[in-house]
Image (cartoon, rainbow, N blue to C red):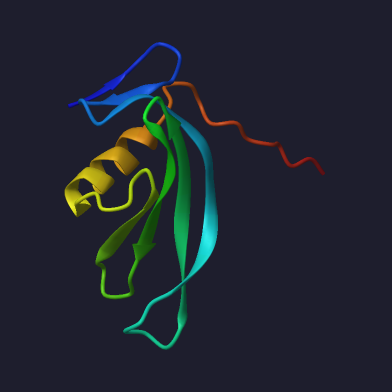
Amino acid sequence: MLTMNDDDRVEIGSLLTNAVLRSLERAPIRMRESGVTHSGWRMEIGSDQGSGSIMLVELPDGRSVYRGEGMFLGWPREQLEAAYGAMREVPDEPRFELQQLG
């Protein structure tokens, strides 16, 4: 079960408490079965249980591959996907946009 606290900390059942998104950035990914470098998203997360990252790679055939590092090493795909999705919740406030003038 995923819940969001008032201070942007996510709780994922009994697995993670007070989870905080530290960073979300693009990262190059090399896979054994592919001769090319893919691009993926690396999400750094800190929690009361420790810290780690979840990698998301979207393959050309439409599949998504999740990989856990640190605290998330060994987690099943379903839990990685749920944690990644919970941490990427879209805020209720409007997105910041810069105006182009002239």
